[in-house]
Image (cartoon, rainbow, N blue to C red; front, side, top):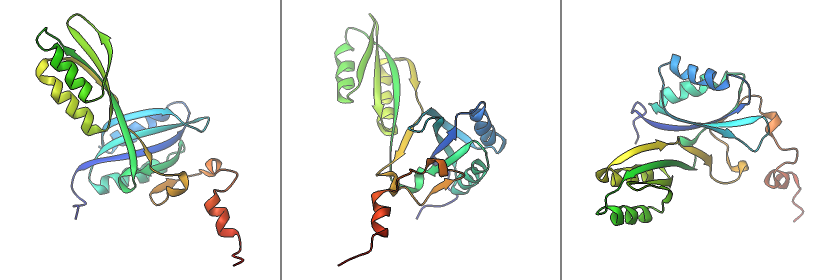
Length: 199
């Protein structure tokens, strides 16, 4: 059984309104309480006027729960999902510039092919690769390239979505005034429950 006081990474998605300084308010909340943000990604969503933040925060279970409660009080925050408690899919991307010599060129390309990476820039003495995948794949690629000489890296934060349909999301969604996000037409599963059984 997992120790609730054990420090580990937690993946949280936050749906926020596109308003000035919303990113500053959220990161300031983490900073004031001493929470360590390991990565942060922000992008537009399927809802106009809304953005989704994906935050990886390091701490024990209690730290994460306190952070979620504090976030839920912010006016800009519409919905929070703690992916640690749900099935989810996540990805991140890295650009890695690797030093080349005539002797290492073939081996570097072979490793890159094994990781299904893409060459995005070719120089006389370096190749730049783009790799997309989960955290483990990204870390493994970097470690494989390290002996050849890594000149530069740029790694994005993780992004994540809950697996399945939105109707499957439930338990660990903290929702403020998110009524505007509820579809006008109920999901078929909900509609089906209201139809009387004639058989």
